[in-house]
Each structure stands twice: as C-alpha cells, then as structure tokens.
Amino acid sequence: MKKNIIKKLGLVLSLSAVAFAGTSCSRDEIIDLKPFNSIDENLAFSTAANVDLAVMGVYNAAQNGFYYTAPGAANTPRGYAFGSAYTVQGDMRGEDMVNTATFYQLTYTATYDPGTANNVHHYENLYALINKANIVLEGAAKAAEGGVITTAVKDGYAGEMYFFRALAHLELLKHFARPYNFTTGATHPGVPYRDFAITSPATIDQALAVGRGTVAEAYAKIITDLNNAESMMPSKTTRTGNMKITRASKEAAAALKVRVYLNMRDWNKVLTEGAKLAAGYALGAPSAPFTSNYGNTESIFSIENSAVTNPGVNAALASMYNNRSLVCISPIIWRNPRWTATDKRREEGTMVRTAASGVKFSNKYKDITNLTDATPILRYAEVVLSMAEANARLGNLPMALTQLNQVRNRALAAPATEAYTAASFANATEMVDAIITERRIEFLGEGMRWNDIHRLLYDDLVPMPGIPAKVANAMPTAAMFTLGTPYTGPYGVAMIPKEDFRVLWPFPLSSTTNNPILQAEQNPGW
Image 1 (tube, one colour):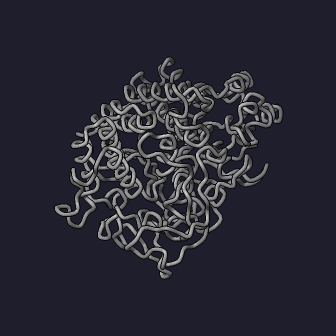
Image 2 (tube, rainbow, N blue to C red):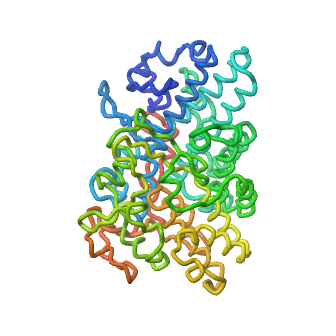
C-alpha cells in the first residue's frame, strides 16, 4: 500500500503528517505512521493541547522543511519553505545579491531543470506546508464540534491556517506562473490550489484531479483565504512577547493583502489594506528590525528561529549571508546612484560587514553562534513603499513622495538636504522607478527582489526586460565596490529575456512523472 500511494501521488510531500512540536521524520517514516493514509486523527485532535501542538507543527513546517536526499537516508532539515531558503531563493533570482559559492548557483544562473534540488524542495515543502494547514483546518473544526476546543479558539487557529495557505500559494505563483498582468484577466495558467487535506487514497485521487487553473482563480482564492484569516485571527495586541511578531495576526493578513493587491495592480485596494496598519506600526531606525528581531515596532510577521529550532549552518540566515560568506551584496546595487554614500543602511557593523578582502556582506543577520535571527516575511516599510507606489500610479504624487521619504529619510545622514522633493521627479514614471530602487535598497538580503522583478516584467511604467544581468557566480573583487559611478560590468551572468522559458521554474519531476494532468500542464520549454 505504501509504495502504491507514493507512486500514485508522485508527490510524497502531500502526505506529510502533522508535525507535533517540531517532530522530524523521513518520507518513509511519514508514510509508515499507522500508515499515514489511515492516521488516527482522533488522537491528533483529541485534546486541546494536541490541537495546539498540531498548529505549532504548521509553524515548524513553515520554518524548517526537509531536504530529501535518498530513500531511507537521514534527511536534513533546511530553511524551507519560509526560513532561510525563502530568503536566499528570492535574492538569488535577482541581481542585488551575489551567490559566491555553489549552494544556490543553479538558481542564480538560471541553469536549473526539473530535478534541481533546491527548487524541488522549495516546491515540495510549500505543498507540505499547505497540506498540514489543511489537516489542521479540518481537524480543528472536528475538535470544536466535539467540544474539545471552543469555537473561538478554533476560529483563531483556522485564521492562522488560512494565512499560511495563502502565503504558500503566493510563493508558488511567483516562481511557477507568469505575473498577474501577463494576460488580460490573468487567464494564463496558475498553480494547483490545494484547499483540502490529503489524508487518504481517496483524497490523493481528488488532488490528482486538480489542475493548475488560472492565475486569476488562484489570486481570488488567496484573497478569500486572507479575508477569512483577517476576520478570524486575533490582533497582535492580544499576543504577548515574541508572538506579536512570530504568530500570524489580523495585521499580518492585511499586510499580505497589500502585497497581493500590488501584484494584482489593484492600487486602490493596496491603499485600503495598508491604511489598516498605520496605527499599529512605526518606522524606527533601519537597523531596528535586525538588532531587535522579536521586539520592534516595524516587523509585522517573521518566522522564529531559536537555538533549538534553527535549521543548522547549511540553512540559517546568519550562516548564508554572514559567517560563511556564501552570499554577498552585489556591486550593482551597492553603486546605485540613488543609494547615498552616507545612508545608514551602509553602516559598518550594524547593517554591513566588510570582509578583509573588501567584499561587502549583509550584517542584518548577526547571530552566528545560535542562529536565532528571525526570517523577515512582512515589514511595515514594505507596506509604506507599496502605498507610495500605488499613490504614484494613481497620480497622487504628493502623497507618494511623502510615503517614499517616510522610509528613505530615516536612513539619510542629512534628510533636510538629501530628501527627495517634488522637483526630484519629472513624472510618475520617474517616481515609481525611485520607489522600486528604494525597495531594492531597503529589503536587500530579505528575499524580496524576485517578487518585484516578477510583477514588473510586463509593467507599463518601469518594465523589467527579464531576469537582470548579474555579477559572476563567484566572490567579487574589492575594486568592484568602489563608489562614485554606477556599476557597468563585468557581468558573468547574462540577462534572460522575459519571454524566455527559464523565467519560470519547471514543475518538479517528482510531481509530473506520475501525475498526467500536471505533466500535460508543465511550463513551456521544460
């Protein structure tokens, strides 16, 4: 039965069991749980404590998914789907961070294929997270019906699960589907939207029958999930300690809707959702979200890492970006003329580490010993800059200017003379271009770059021509970081035009081999 289930699904990830309190297991062990296709849900959701553990298992799945090596092997935890892997993959698809070694070389150079490990595991762990969220949604509902937990408690948990389901599907869309405005009405192929738990052979068959649908349909489901999440989750004001930032909340749902509507180019709704957050968050020093990961006024939602739950040196943020020097800042953004030389985001020791070689590294992630730096997912600076962009595109340039400066000025050495003014931009196009550049500077090393490249491929004002040209996959030289002029080369990785099939990742072989529907819907060129 076990082998038949695996072969039939072609995606063992979808059979992932609820991870109780961070319990880890291999794929074979997962299937062997009684087996999993007949797991005793009465036990999993039989007490309030067990239900809470199941919820924590979903958070664990978001932080620390598995890197599968071989059947029976001791598979290692890595930072999938929203730990460090999310951050590094998002940066490596862009041009502003350089992959100096081989860890993410295939992503950086766009030389991946349907079997590329990092991309396969990114995909598989996202769907594993989705399935775990769906299991908890169904299990918590049954627990509430049986009086194990109250309806109010069930609703709070359900809101968190809807949030993770939306976040995971959005991540899949930006790697495996064209941007929202690729076709009129976003009628081009999206990704399979899993909104039920896969726990039996019957639900495997049900899942196999779900095709990609359209991007419009997927985004509509994301918005529905986030509306449900916002209405059901508690506010961050009811949380205590780290949980104000590391547990999903109404505010996190609203902030994620800002990102979703920005991708959908619904500028008015960007403003509506963003306005909900003005009273609850404030921008402090640019370094605040990183010197105090779990206790600042700007972080809306972050994935918690601790000394006992971090994914190890091969997948922790402080290892990848800092201590092991595997990812450095690119001269392309370092020498961008809009990034002033005295900007506090260049501050040595606080935001940047300069190696003895002269190469610049991000110092946002500082804990090289216990690897406890939180993975930033949603910050208020993103909300403000998204509102600035929406206002600029709607023609409200004065408000857009105010919001752009709200983020930028806090990093300037002399805002009185260095701040942008109305005379800085001849039109909305120039202002939007400045806002996009500000996003590149502000979120450097946070995995945000690919989302912006992806959504702007077919933009009307500041279109991206494709995946930008990059510095070579290697350690840059100190001379490449010399300020004074924009970086003009050399480039070791050529630009990939937006029409090229490599702009999209292929669906993994583990998904398509035994799934005729998805195989027929593989991204063109793969």
